[in-house]
Each structure stands twice: as structure tokens, then as C-alpha cells.
Image 1 (cartoon, rainbow, N blue to C red):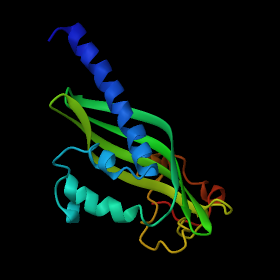
Image 2 (tube, rainbow, N blue to C red):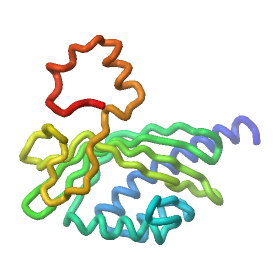
Image 3 (cartoon, rainbow, N blue to C red):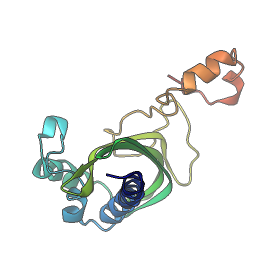
Image 4 (tube, helix red, strand yellow):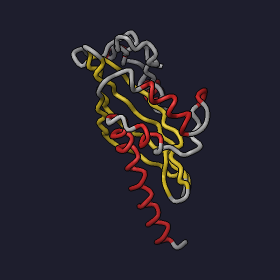
Amino acid sequence: MSDFEARLDRVESTLAIQQLPIRYALAVDGRDVDSWVNLFSADVNCGKYGIGRAALRQFIEPAVRNFYRSQHFLCGHQIDFKDADNATGRVYCRAEHEDGAHWVVMAICYFDTYVRRDGAWFFARRQEKHWYASDILSRPSGPDFTQWPGQPEIPQPTLPGDFPTWRNFWERAGGGAEGKRTSYPVK
């Protein structure tokens, strides 16, 4: 492959990967489970649910029954190529969920792994991490930054502490941030 062909392939790959998060958001918000699962590689590892798209469906279909409507607003996308057929990325998202009398807002960063199979790009993995979940009429606050009534299984927020540079920044700053944050302890 010539240098030009490799660069063109990288551009085409970037454009294809950039379509995955918006297709994901549209599938979630439209409850198009078939399209949603087909955004993932056929051998997607769903942990305790098993391997493959059928396992993914077993996880996601009941999960989206926990709220009525949703909107996922994408705010940016970073892509890092490992090689011609593998990449990682991070996608910022603000998601809103209608759950009975509550309208819950989440600030999310998706940590993605992408793979190209037979010329098409897929998610190999999509890990959601968030800063907070809070009713739209409330401000995010401690102690756990997850105020979603009736949804006890939402994991504790791990951001911004899961960004590798976060702790180093505050350690070098020598403290002083205590008065600038709420009561939730930063990892």
C-alpha cells in the first residue's frame, strides 16, 4: 500500500468510526435494538452476559426499559489508531432520560474500542463512565453524584478520576482544590 493509499484509508476509517457514536445514539433513542447490536462486532465480549450480539441484546434490551424517552447529545470524539484495523476513542455525551416524574441528566464519557472486520468498522467495546446523574431540576451533588430515583444499579461516577492525568495534576498543584469541589471524594 502506498503512502497515499494508507493516508486515504486512515481518512476513510476516521469518517467511518465517527459514524458509530451517532448511530449508537440514534439507535438507543429510537429503541432500534437491531441497529444498536449490529454496531458491535459479531464477537463482542459482554462479560457475564456472554459473547456475541445475542448476549449484547440480553443486556441492553431490558436496560432501556428502565426509562421511557432519552436523548444522547454528542459533544466531541477523539480517535487514536493502534494500527490499520484497530483504534480506541473517547466520546463526550450529555444524555437525558425520562423516568416517570423525573428527567435525569447524565454527563458521560464513552471509552471505546473499535475494530475493522471485512472492511467495516464496529465497536469492539463501549464502556460508559460518568461524572454525575441528576434530575434536571437539581444540581449534581454529593455524596455519590448519582441521584436517579428508582435506579439503584447505576455505578458510582468514576470521572474525572479515571482520566490518567487527573490525579497527577492535583498532586502537582499541591492541594488547594478542596474548597473548589463538593463533598464527593475524588479518586
